[in-house]
Image (cartoon, rainbow, N blue to C red; front, top):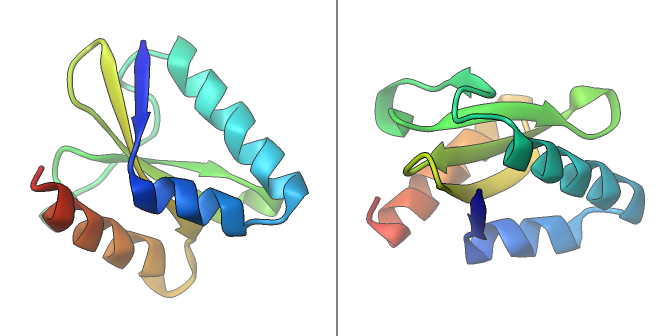
Length: 98
């Protein structure tokens, strides 16, 4: 499976501390081996996207889209508190025009 990350995803990973960066990258590696059914289905403006938990005490979410069975688009990663990661994901999707 080919994994593509948005610039926002890359920036967000760089801002995390090293231990959480490792956890996020491990989760991304696991996503490569899963089928497109991994994670929680999102609704509303994020229809067609999924979210998976990661980080210390599952405080982070990776929002991604399985564009095809071969391509996985990583949209954004961030803390779930107050739903900010989902708001960022909507903004990134508008920029990417997905």
